[in-house]
Image 1 (cartoon, helix red, strand yellow):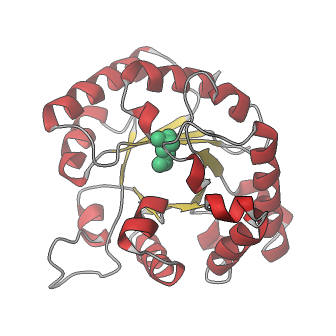
Image 2 (cartoon, rainbow, N blue to C red):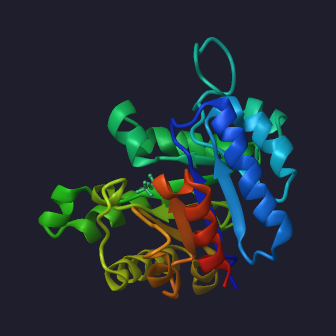
Length: 252
Ligand code: PGA
């Protein structure tokens, strides 16, 4: 059975003191409760070391991005090699904000996924349609294209090491979500693509999370769906009460 996964993506938020306070509160909850899901927190790069120390492996720590280069004269960049040397085991790649503001596209993301896998860092690969795609009823077509570009580059062994996150762009940070049934249908559709490209066994193994305006009120309606293996949480991961409520819902 696939393990349930909850990822908190803090994006470019919090001062160091605010970040430490939040980490300590989440950590306290994890230490005092039995939690039946994998929790991964992605703070800004600057706070990764604090997160590793505070969470002490009970909560996994992820970077929010990573360079496509291994090392060298790339001012301002952070490499997979550097992340691995700090014991960071996860990296979010292809988030729609990276695609939109930093023009990251599939060809670049494939390079990044390859390097992450080479350094044994689990890529958390985000995909999803725009509002315009949805209005034109093209969401299945667009997501199929994004996923197939990835699938044709990785073998059976590599693909099961990637966590996938379906994030309809129009739903991120907007408070708007599709209905749980609509999202379940997309997850089912994507899982079928894995079956066609690899096998039933592989498609059953791949984790597909949903992300986009999840909060403690709507989380359950998504998490009860059979093909939704957890969530990638933005705004609601910045507040300890909200995030802890979502952890409780996923692990119940
Ligand atoms: P949101 O963000 O939960 O604030 O919509 C999700 C994400 O960007 O991963």
